[in-house]
Image (tube, rainbow, N blue to C red; front, top):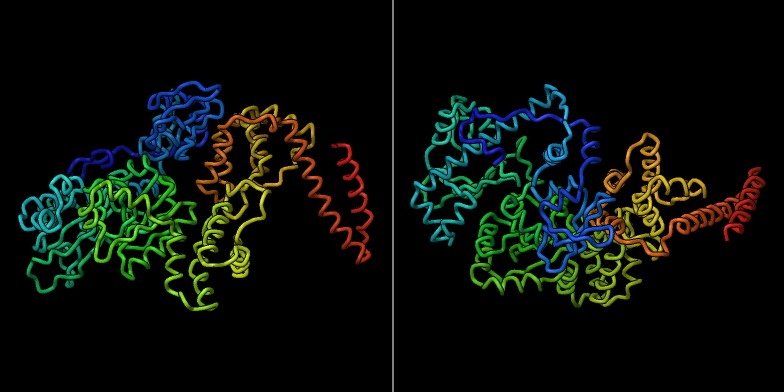
Length: 616
């Protein structure tokens, strides 16, 4: 619960205000990342870097590395990493402004705070009020559950929940009356506009007064990772005799604090377990989440009555590497599994599919098998690609050529959703073998269907997938130069300019990084690991996997083959060779059309040939 507000609606919090960007940079410059992380992790010197056991997943051998010079950390086991701000946010489960304020306090940076605009203050205040109203409603529903023996019997005896599980998930009950919650909120002096907006109350048809929407229902509070209650899910209490029982499930409507496309049920309780294991178990229903947690599967979460969205997948990619779906085995469950696959794969996540036995739900299955058996079956769940390839084969077996085409069409969107070229290429190879096709045939089919990404690049040129779409990908040489730039920006810029290498970078992201480094040097600001990562993040749609690879490069020792002078020479040579290829094509075109540009192009070509010869 944000700020431990207390139960009175009118209790408030001090205003939160924005932090000026120059002060954020001052905090970042002053922070000692070794000191920040050393308060949590026992670090040991390994050369110029420090290592220890990762605080975000279980491990016996240290794979967690901190580079005080680059001001970055990275775990080579679970692949999380970032700067000091990121560490505090991830470890303490706080937002960015809170992390900045904590580090500013610890490192003696005063934060002059600007006043909120009237609109900012209005929006923030409105949200705070809505959260407080939902918290009051949760307390009311919890109290009503304790007073309803029949509702407790349903949860404990019919659904098999332990009292401590009910308390942990803060389940509640909406009684049969029409005004219990309405009266409660009125007594707390809550204006009716807020519970009406949140869907806790409805307005009577005659416009005179309000009524409780959640009558005769088991209540499931839906909390954000912070603990704030964003909304409610409600299941009809079928034992209550009423003429109009309403739908089986009734959920909160969208509101300024409840966005179904980005919220998970159970994430407030599962987030730490997900971060440690780097794995999330995605199920469909509230009881599925609760039952799995009770059985010890504490990475279980569910979407709130909606399909998995891009926002959901993006949120998961920041906490986990692998998602295991555990949906019902009926047609609706299979459809949900299929619709979840593309957004998850697009985020670079590994997805596996746990197929339940016929007639089982996740909660009933978890209650029936031992924790050891459950974990073993989770570990053996097939990848999403393998799973849907096998389903496609079963659906269209014996269909001849037309059947094979249908099989490929079923799995094509999944294969093309994989952003990492290497992972995509491996998946295409495996899918082709299982479908009885030659991999080149499958690749040609995928290319013919017109994916914006294509089935994968030609091998060799670029490091696999630092950015989807290729716009931010850095070559191996560029990554080596970036390593030097972070470790010694002034000397790296000087050498590159002396050798004419400043304009030799083929990747737009690296050119942007280079300009930012020069700008900072000119005005006396530091260019370090966090500054470099900021540019990469803002440059384009860079995946977590791509950022992880770049951090690994920055925190790994450079080999002898990556000596700066040699890297710059090779970059210049490659840039000349690329320009020569362009000129050859342009000269051929100019000669064919008698263009007056022919002599100019030819002269540039001759000059570059001479320059290339002098470089060797």
